[in-house]
Length: 344
Image (tube, rainbow, N blue to C red; front, side, top):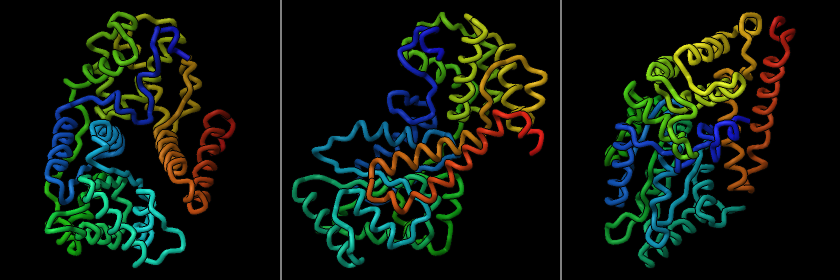
């Protein structure tokens, strides 16, 4: 809606991860360096953790863009609550190998043959497991067992594990001792600092053609944005997207701190469940999408992306997807209808 008004070539603060928007903050640059180091070692596990919305998936997609397909065969697995046997089946499917109707022994043989063929052609195999905090301990142990495949003591499989903060506690489980011994590097993604907010926002704006003058951000506006978002990249994206929409609807050419506060108050009311009060006391025409709905949207995007990549999983994921859509539709109706909000 506002893209043409500001003369952008695209949406600068989209929620879906896009490597072209990758911003090398101090913590994200360090994490990317760990991933590159892991690739150079060609063995073991690299663990990257971070809170919701800190940019783990964008980080991985940035790494994918650097890979030489002639030297590295990579696959990404976005996990749900997969038990050990289901995890093995999912890994095999992620690399495009046959899996239907096969037992565990056959699946392991298919995967071992695949690893050997890649090694013979001088290619290494990389598995990236996203949302690793969802995996039971037994499934993580299955991943460790897969790392045992080797030729002449040279590992044939390397794995990167990405998860939310609780994954660090999972790795401290007594049963994870052998996996911990194979972790060659780990890093935790922190939110952006107050000094990184401005470079982050301007970086994303410049990607879509922003020249620095329209819209113009006051210095105090950046400080206020950090205050409302705590520097979490996804929250910054949501906030700035709504700020740009606010500017378009109010025909603003610059954003002072007062404009940021107007959007910030509205979003705080949303998160506190005060949608009715916001409609009564605010003249802003912005769409009100609370943090809970934002998380549901992200989950839907991840599920749909997985289904499109692996259509053979559709039956297994259909019921889960339908439940998420129902929850999102219910939240949308509540947000759109003041009477529903009053009765809730």
